[in-house]
Length: 236
Figure 1: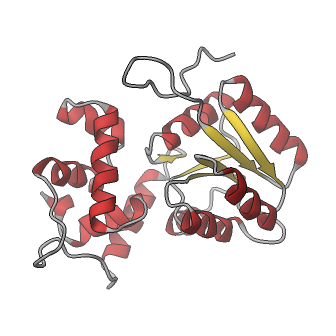
Figure 2 (figure 1 turned 180 degrees about the horizontal axis):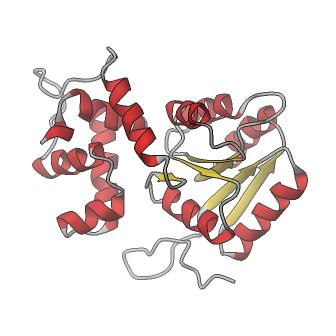
């Protein structure tokens, strides 16, 4: 059993509510095992689903904070589920848990809005840590895939795409600290690494990122990194 590290601490030092997680996988035994591991570790498993249509419907009903999502689903593929649930609730974070480590699958998941990607060969401890970090907004990838994803961010940034320009008159302007955090996000650093680099708290980094997303009218880390790279912030 966990000692309760899965909920974040409130400002008064008390434990916050446990992270609400939904598990989506078409294999009942795997789905039940993952749900049980999460539950025993202190997460609140609010729903499960065995196909894509069911996943979208239940996610809208229960509003999880993190969805642990398989890609190979009947009725609707996982990447489409990812797109739809994030479009409905941009604050939802998706951790793909797949048997596939193929680069094409990883990149498609990232482009659909997934925060992280873990292969099913990961240990229970790795899964629990990945869900914790995903809930905190950190990008989580099976070792060896993070560089691939950052390369894809850069490739996407080379393509024309509509994005708010903070330099236009009347456009929202970022504070110096928000710009500093954005620059480190663009370099591929996780929130914990950024916090250590800037000597601020993990929560403060999260707040800066959320404020920046709101100001720029972006929805997730993929769009944020793309925005930063387009403006050369990763080269500073």
